[in-house]
Length: 396
Ligand code: SF4
Image 1 (tube, rainbow, N blue to C red):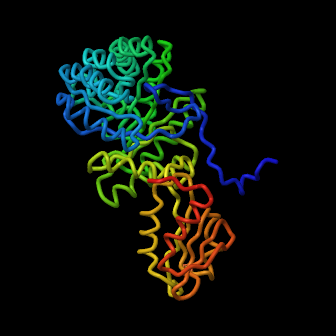
Image 2 (image 1 turned 30 degrees about the vertical axis):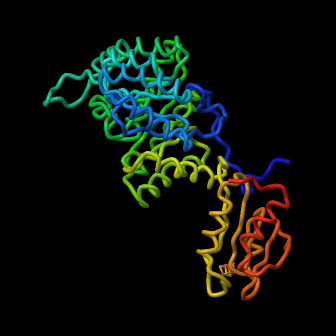
Image 3 (image 1 turned 135 degrees about the horizontal axis):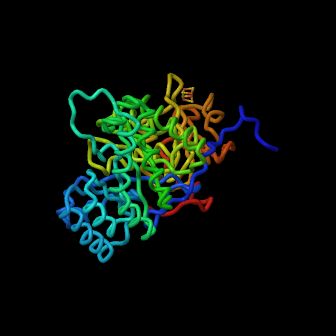
């Protein structure tokens, strides 16, 4: 029987086409892919290889590098070769920051996906008096963009590689700004213009992003993009992110507000949390967002009460101890609850529970069943013993 919509707790992801990025696939029902970007200079081959490897080892599934010059593009050949000979193949994306096609064509030989920003394909002649663009001027610039983009599209298409059309709210072209304003509509039109060029060349390995540093703008732009793509029968996957989110707690919350809001509506196939911190710090945030929404389960889910006057032990310390002992056990839900008054009922169907029973004693639960009462001092070890007895333990 179909679940009534108001009781449906599943996130239904928007159907998108699969887009290959080396050994990983974005979209097509594949798990939401986690990505980030190294901040080493691409000319520093050994440093870049180490940075890419470091990120990949902690779960970054696609790594992006920046390619500001031809020398950087050529360095990617060495980076790729070194990675494969000393580590393994890592899906790589190159960020190309200009409309000079030579660099993009060189780098397309070495990476799995090229990211371009439509706002940087600028052919407008500077004119301080300009008040707008006629349809003809608009179309003529469109033709120049097509001419410029075509060799890259053909190269990626013929190699079976992919492209991200990465629109940024902060860098829309002047012609889009004049015609559609500094709006989500301008962002959507920028993306659609590039998508249509690619489609006319029979290239559909496309991922689209609509980033902005203000969350409401970013949300509106992605939602409008989805609406337009649905109307046009396009099923390109989306790369989600909030640009310039900053650092620390607020940077994480701001990124989560934007990314998770869309993911909860089924929008988004790959995510990047952009923090002004080492890129390694972004990866756990990505996985936490995906786990909290039930989109991917890559770590133990801890359910713990906030504690109150009824709490029978130091909940913060015990939760820390339980986490340290069990955090390597992927796939389990473990609850730590302060008392039996509300604890067992609120454990959200966790696999195991550690619940305050009476002063000095705790109760261990398997699901909703109380298994045994043990002195608090032995609680964590007894929890481990219970998991072991159930055959669900693995050594760290
Ligand atoms: Fe308080 Fe018990 Fe609820 Fe924890 S489970 S917040 S200790 S009433």
